[in-house]
Length: 414
Figure 1 (cartoon, helix red, strand yellow):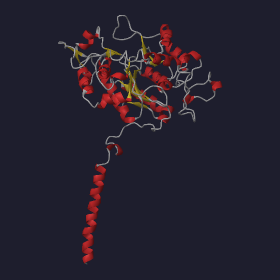
Figure 2: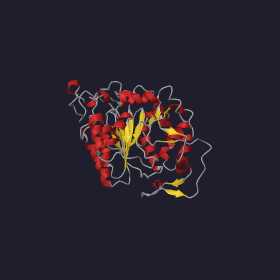
Figure 3: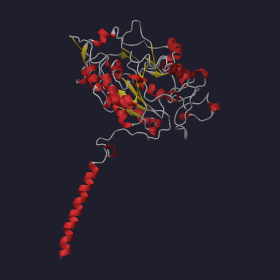
Figure 4: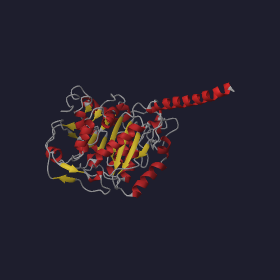
């Protein structure tokens, strides 16, 4: 009887001790070993990506851009990259549904699982900071969801001038983005920038605006405040292209910066006209950690009026030769299904209508069939196969010019 009375409290004490021990173990487990409270709504590839570098793309589209977005995505697609699509909230519901149907119906997108759509899109205001907010939103999603080396933001009006991974038959047009970037330091940031504001000082730096897209469900123009402000003295303003290629390290700094500069500048640029043309430039050039990682080029070919207007000229057949000679990676802007896009597909990308840009991942592996091969889907056993051109001639020429000892440091944050 005495032993029985002794065992009951012992068992109860043991149970309580075990419960407390397990609770302490769970509470002290590193958070990255626990399931997130809010699970991501997208599924990522395995971390064993067989390609040397990985790009994470944001492709933004507005109302009426659906067909342009679909074509640009197919021209850019590669199974080693990630693609996040943002369709403006202002676009009709039918366009959102058609985009979702397009992604879900494609067998390659379904097989690889690297094309996603922003489920809760933003209302993007022309010349307002909501475009910047959308870019930072996309970076945040991609940082949380997958492993990549560089982030690239594009619009549906952009188009690639080189392959992600491909061997073009014409010897003068060898090109390959993955192969060229695999040779570069992973901390480089391609951000076109300048501290010489020129006409932008009075048109961008001094005006104060309010973007209704932050608080209104209906799209409208930005509001202009009558009173203007002086240029800041706490930091130096830089301006440049809204189209950038950011390293993962700098992208993380933009979202979770360990000092307060990213947040300070974000608040300042909330009332800035065309803030995507200044935020990343000003942030990186005022950061001691990153100002020496800038390459002063956005790898775009863009044709502006003289003097420049708000939007660049639409490119056509007469611009084709200059685009190629400039050795750029992307060009903008293009009208839907312009004839020059067909020429780019045919001569630079070897892409057939409705198919993907040619690359090692969809090749037959037979060099004799290079002229006639097409890219309609992933070939068995070809995932991870690269078919780089001979030195990626055109892009490497541009990179060599801007990364040379003479130009690299001299053009940084001046």
